[in-house]
Length: 385
Image 1 (cartoon, rainbow, N blue to C red):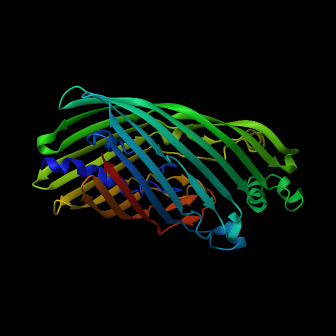
Image 2 (spheres, rainbow, N blue to C red):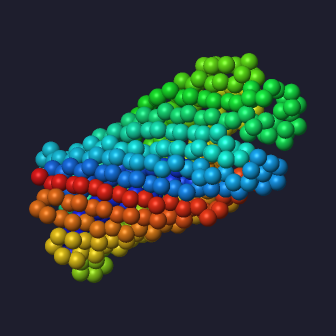
Image 3 (cartoon, rainbow, N blue to C red):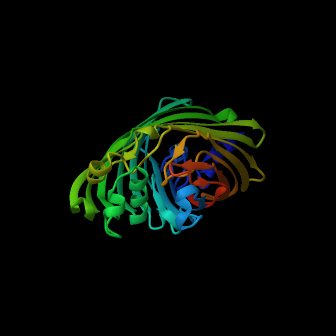
């Protein structure tokens, strides 16, 4: 049973947590805090690739330029790094690098053709852990998040929105002049990490609660919107990344069998993109999220031999209904993944694959996004020395 306590780290290769444009905000990967509980010095490299398929069908007036949206969610790759070492018997530290948030949306057909949005980020975190005794420990540190973003709204999209609102500009503006774009320059901000854990090595039990504070980006933004008389207008766009609380747990339930999982809450209702020129002309934001997100994960691990372990995991996010953003036209997630870990001396290699059904959604124009899914593959290599 004691040997099973290290299996939780294997689940970090199963990486389809939240996709490019779904109810789970723009989460992409989490810090692998399990590295803090590895013995001695430990280094880990991770890779994952996610390929979502999110398509919609235009209805009513929106179908005038075609009925299909095409796949609007681009595939993406995440890379991660973790290094942990002990300072003394009670104190240890770890450094993490990952890609916490991201978006890659691009429409290729119909009314939304040419509507694109990207969000790129990198995170580095430094964490100290203090172990009181065999059972209790606390940990905390700082996270530095760097992000940049871009969005383009095509002429026909803005024109249709103005026409629906009865704005005469939709018919008066020359063709092509209503296109809008915004570019947010790279911005970095610092947040806080605080956590605590309880362990029972004799039954492979570990429960950890982690708080990650949000950060507020202030992007230097260049907006282009010719009809508004504001070509290459410079301003600042403030976007808030939410606080998040994550409860991770594992416990042995039988010889060589481990139950593990997590519950994560993220306050995505604080997030909106409202560039100043766009807001001045439309009195609105470009995109936001209507609901906070709770992500549930539950899995089983089984040690087959001294070298080989296997595991399976299910993921669930509740569908909330309501009107979806065109840049995030999904609602909830149901996912299932499997994987295996091979250990040899100090080396640990883990691979996993996961399939997720992404919830159906309807946006403000009545465009319906149904039958969406994603497939993800992850690989991590860890070494203890």
